[in-house]
Length: 592
Image (cartoon, rainbow, N blue to C red; front, side, top):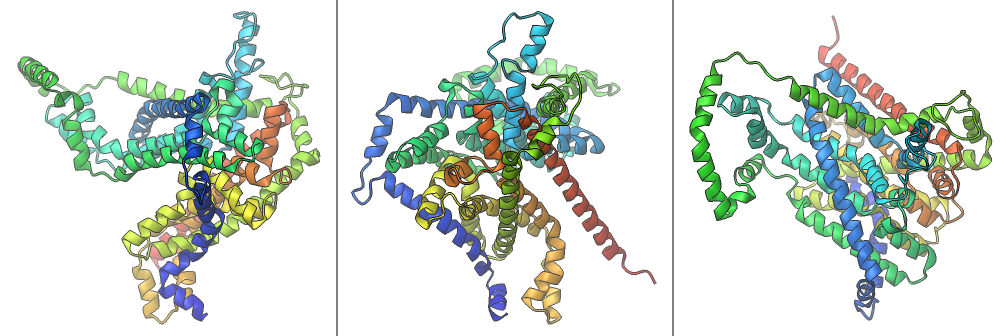
């Protein structure tokens, strides 16, 4: 009890368990990996020179950057107008659209990739439809090429772009747009000069997240692309699997990590830019910085100003009739985006009930044979049970450790809090293949490779960061005066936390636990590296079947994984609803 009271008075001590796990499993190994890449203790850059000395390696590196940029640009082009229309929609419709965006965000990435294999394959939905209509005589090459990889990457990362944009756009005061319109600005001018600069923090954060995650893509290019579409993560994984030269592998991993650090330094440090800075940027576009373009622009503005003034005066006192076309176009666009996000999953769900020997759409007859195959096959049910066991242990460990860390971080000095938060979030900001290689090295030294304990520790370093993010966001809105009131009534730190703090932040803790379980249950790359041939989780079983044979049982498994996020959303909603009812009862007080 004395130790707990001391930890309560020294909040920084609550971060020790999280930092200890991170240091042992990931921190020390990644430092050792870096030294290995430099041939310590001799210290040379021979491994980096060997990497850049091979044109094939340079091609894969540039290809990785190119594919990540293209996927990020596509996500921005699609995600920004989608988020804008969602924010402008009525409340009931807005909530429904956000849920439709969140569901694929929480759905297993392997299940979504399998859905695209079913749609784009030589005997997939599109080719079968075209063949039945007689439009083609042989299947089109829709899969195992660069376009298929882009489709898969955008489908997986689009919710990651939309959600930060929605969060930022919600905070923009809509009266600013109305004020701009009242001053004579046209709708597009008001949007471009007022709304867009204020939404730039969302654009920057979404772009940063999408690009960094795309750099570490491994499953998508391996499943949907061809030999010419490999990314650096595929190259690193093949080195780990087939080569004993850890120094060359370490150099490749740190080259990928260096790109991530450069991007984080260039973009990530300015994620909290002020609105004023955004407005200033919008008022001085880059074309006006060139003297010739600036002069031409001023001359054109002076020429059209009288006509613009007369047109504005003529429209000033007219009845406000707004064109319906922007709303129609926006509605159609959002519907197409939602179809893009949900359609692959719906196709797989329908095909999983097929009664034939192979998957077909639409199913000629309905049957549960593939679900019976899943539950009746020990290899499938055993893999699922292993994933559940590992996921539950990871959830319990990361929720306890992450909640303590978040509680301690919110009560430390700002500079120290920022530094420690950055350290704890490192495993979820670095490319997953780099984290996997470092974790592989750390567990190798601990003798925990190919063991459930090793896999649990490997999953926990990322799950802890996820819990810290969610619980910290909940604690940011927590009124600390309630704790002070409890302490003033002679309650100890532990009693105050259990009786006051914990009940109020319970929704955030449950949300963190849900995301921690999903993080562990869907993990493939790190599990493949540290689990070896001994640990077979459900995602690994799915991945092996996708690569080696298209077993129709995967459709049933994918359907169950797609329904899992719906179950978690219901749990989160019920938790929020109960918390809201409790708060309302507290505010109303007892009736006398």
